[in-house]
Image 1: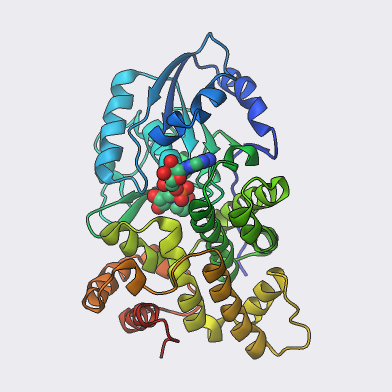
Image 2: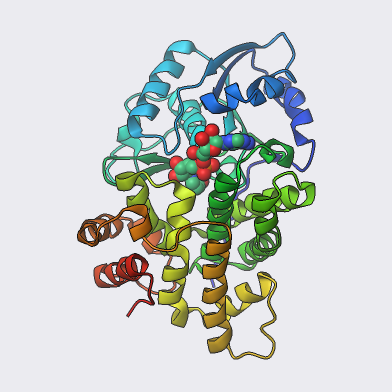
Length: 390
Ligand code: NAD
């Protein structure tokens, strides 16, 4: 096994009340003029005001709220142009992955030439050269882990692509579960399964290491025990705290070990059909894990245990099959459809989806089982029919 390189966001405030540290962190970064990137719904909810009220009046704040879920490349281009003109010195992102991903791109590209498009992973031609403006990221969903990853995801016409570099890492991440209390059940469910997918894919990734294993297993334990409760009883402080820590740890795990097949197949669902990122991962999770099960039975036995079930009397074959069953039950219990049909995808779309997914080489390269076009089609077909992949 090769030595691993592990990187983390250098300063993290995590846990109930963590948001109290915002002012001291903004002051420590020495900036006066702050660009806040957030989504309009959180402004209407009063959450953005509540958070910004923690900042001293000496800061000059510019609020940018043109963020929609699953942000497009065009949205990124518009924000970057605005940030360059606006001459901010610090960027604060408040929201789910959509707002945080845009905040990261704005901060870094503020000090670069060219378009966001030039820096995309699959089709871009330019490399980032510097870290850009400092950034503080404050998640309000327990899902993407964007506050501690080095990726920003953008929706293109028929799929998604990313800008990825360690320059995108936040200077400070503030993860306060209290900010997630207002999440409705549907978004709690989809973002929570997104976080679970991060932890599971990191655990079975070919780049997994003892460090990322520890993070991923703890994340699976925390999410497994809290997600149903957080969906049903959104005000439950313990469930929200566990889910928030779970999402944070899953983010640390996947940022270092990577995610793989579920994400590669989910990106075209987001890009082409605008299905929320968490839901597109959720609908595919049981089918991808079922398909690759034979390549990672031992690890799936561990996941089954971390989800709170007892694998001791079972063979790895049995436990890994039961693991897939429990993942399917979990997705169903939190109210997410279990077939692509239910998302209005037609069988005739599956070939195009396969063509797009196969381009996600960065992701597919980490799968414990190589996934070729025919494998990907079989998984989509199984997810379309709601049956086991052949
Ligand atoms: P989101 O940011 O799109 O938000 C979903 C909805 O939830 C929005 O309508 C938002 O207004 C609402 N919302 C957010 N916080 C709320 C709160 N506390 N109370 C009530 N409503 C709230 O959803 P997301 O799943 O967090 O982010 C998805 C995006 O993140 C996608 O574009 C996806 O590709 C990307 N992503 C990024 C990474 C990464 O590492 N950078 C990882 C996974 C996904």
